[in-house]
Amino acid sequence: MKSRDGFFTTFFISPYSRYLARWCARRGLTPNQVTTASLITALIAAGCAATGTRGGFVAAGVLLLLSFVLDCTDGQLARYSLQYSTLGAWLDATFDRAKEYAYYAGLALGAARGGDDVWALALGAMILQTCRHVVDFAFNEGSEFEGGGGGAGPAVGLSDRLDRVGWTVWARRMIVLPIGERWAMIAVLTALTTPRIVFYALLVGCALAACYTTAGRVLRSRTRRARRTDRAARALADLADYGPLVELLTGGGRGRARTGSLLAPAMAFLSSAVLLVWVISQPDPASWLTVGVAVCSALLAAAALARPLKGALDWLVPPFFRAGEYLVVLVLAARADAHGRCPRRSGWSRRSPTITTTRSTASAVAPGPHRGGWSGRPAGTKGGSSWSPSSPPCCPPQVSRSRSRHSLGSWRCWCSPRASASGWPRTITVHPPYTMKENPHDRPRAGRRRRTASAPLHRHPAQGAGAGGP
Image (tube, rainbow, N blue to C red; front, top):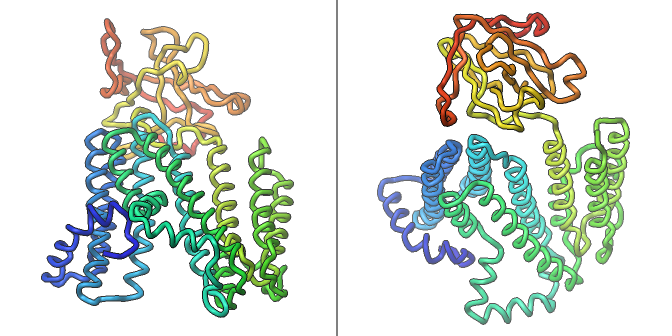
């Protein structure tokens, strides 16, 4: 086991995974093969979580823990058989991110199947975890100073004194929520609770861990007076990933470095904050003003990178850039008017050949006489050709049945007020031999029998020739 492993890994995983590592070594397996097996196991766990069932969530939690056991086994196998490689280290780090983010997506998909939209929480968890990794990489890359480590300041001395007290070592390792503790929390909460609770706990825990680690690193950096090496400054500039436009404006960052200056992190923060605040505050960011704000953000980024990143806190520049970039994307995705973008259990489909619908709730149907009727959403199709009603570009139509319980002749498609102004709702006529029946997943109301009726489906002329016919 490694000396810096967390509490859960040290006492619950490593004592047993070493036997698995020896078993793999006797059978000639390589560390890269074990790493790949860990990735496949995590992807299967994500698929189980995507089912949206309680059994699927329990299986996903168990498989996620098994994937972590294999993740610990590959490193122990490499040390046991002396099979070290740069490719193996890269695969291990890359697959860890891929496994975790694929599992987040599986949880969000499973929640969507159950009617709970948590995609924004899943993206937020991915962004937060990515920013934590960028902070780790930037701080480690920028920790090379001229003449050694730059001297031990008060923060380092306090850390050394705390390390002499046994329980504080494990408490501090658990606070930062390393991969072992994080995956164990995700697995247990997945099996026992809902995806929404999993993401809430993950966001809160990772946010506290990020604040703790970043605050400690800032205090440690402020006490150093040594000058960062040229290699470390170039590594930070590469992590910033500023692009050719900023490089053209900065001239390659050939200015004179200032060790104690806070100009670079301040400009990087403003560069990200200006664009993010603008996108949040504007009701419709799709305008030429947004392009102008983006240009201002690029100019501030150029000001941040005009000098070599040798300041005490210049390692914060890459995390500020990445956080601003990802948060802008998250805000735009959350504000996008793309209703029904997640898979739904009920909807329109052609199945040998039937159109399946389900009873609507009060929020799923148009107001007025159509409330309490029937509704449907476009869904995927199985086998052969497919048909779906033409819909405006804003969202799939919410279909509500006419007021008459026994009339199956007309259906009305409702969408947003913006789409209604362009000619919606529209009527779809239904005739034999197509049938409309209730979704078998939904229980019928007390005292009401399931009704089926036949009808050929005629496409409305306004739907255009682009939609597929029966």
